[in-house]
Image 1 (cartoon, rainbow, N blue to C red):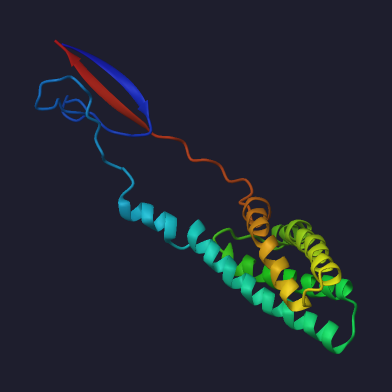
Image 2: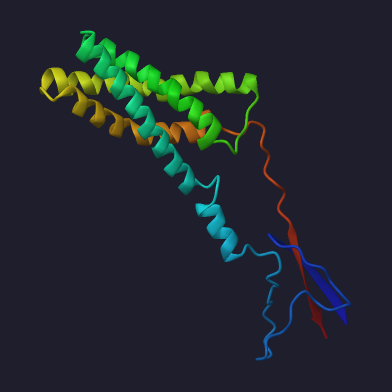
Length: 200
């Protein structure tokens, strides 16, 4: 009897007592039946999708922080325009930047808390957050506000809500892929499975 061992990426097994890493099916065919040891369980898959640090839970937290940031932005916009008589565009820029700083602090400590950063890295994230989220919110938000309020006559608070909804999706993607990254994270090596067939 001679042994022919083939390494298959993705699994790791051991050859115990001279037996192969699979058993022939009852029908007598020689198809390999790989072991399922180490497979990700359904519970683990659900945890990855819906558990803490998952994209689903991150979207929910991002939305909660965004709603709080919207309240900050709206309150400041109301104060600047409705009480202090600011023009709509500069008031929008100030209110949006205040919301950007508010949201960054909460995203750093809550939304992407599973991606911690030291003071230097956090400062870099703040710069990237202002460039991406802040820049898009400021420019896009101001443009939408000018269009809706000045050109179309929409009430400035309703126009502000519309601008927030428009930029939210882009801001989440930019935050996840560009701002709150894991620098230097290396991919884990892929284990191998050994299949052993026996020839008579």
